[in-house]
Length: 354
Ligand code: PEP
Ligand code: MN
Image (cartoon, rainbow, N blue to C red; front, top):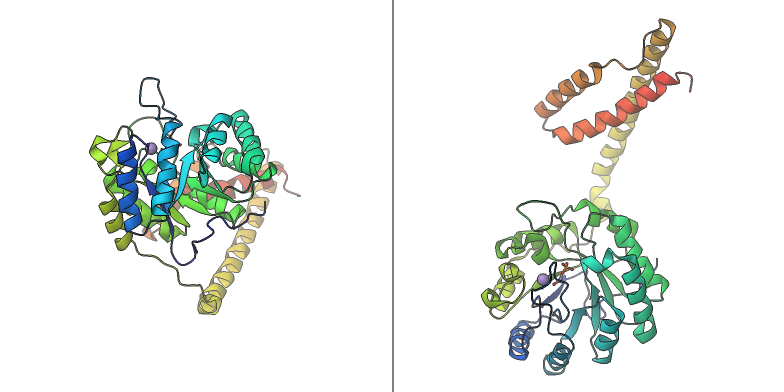
């Protein structure tokens, strides 16, 4: 997938893009009060949910189309670009008619290929140049996330970005939605030009986690942050525990450390050649280990001994974990490493000549 630049004004290489605004548009004055403070602090992108996908019926499900005119006012009064969530063709049509600048797809919609296809086709018909951000699906399924992006791409939408909002897990945890950073990192590796925005509000679920999660995201190299911001967060009609005031957002923005120095490849070349040499040594040692495994396999075969000896791997692993711990390496890493090495040894002992 070849993407076009997502944020036309903002250069994400020098400063992260900040998208801020309430979880939900509640009243015209709440939207405008919040937006005016954010605009005065230099925020360029305003978010507000107009249609809210609530887990259970009975909660506040958004103000609906009426709120679109409030966003249009934010746009004309403050000059900020305005964004909202769309989940159905009717949302797309109404949002684009009202002049909304940017759309996002919520986590529950990303997880539904039928809804995604309908939304993609409708955006394509109404305005395929509008930027669209796709939140990760609620479950930790990278392919489903990519599939949603592909449906938009195949419909001709090229200004695409992703939002990492964490993944649901059962039970009580520190995070509302577990970050599982490896998943957005894998997305970055597969699509290096796709902007990825972090949503620390929905990952953390609590105000105090917004700053550390934002710093973590920027340190990893995300292109921006989407942060739920409300003029009176304690009174918010949805997600009150995770919304912060515009003043608090401004403080966080000033405290965040932005690492935007370009990498000079020469500065790392000596360390990188040490890594290359060590990797070669590792491969040589592994090849020697495999040779011994093969000999063991032949011995077992010629003496009628089965390949798998039930306690051997458990004992081996326990001892390797102990040794590695004394060298400062974590047990999960060592467990994974030796599981792969052992599986290959077993494979070779079953077919010692291959
Ligand atoms: C939101 O951004 O307010 C929202 C509903 O998010 P998510 O789809 O990530 O739950
Ligand atoms: Mn929310």
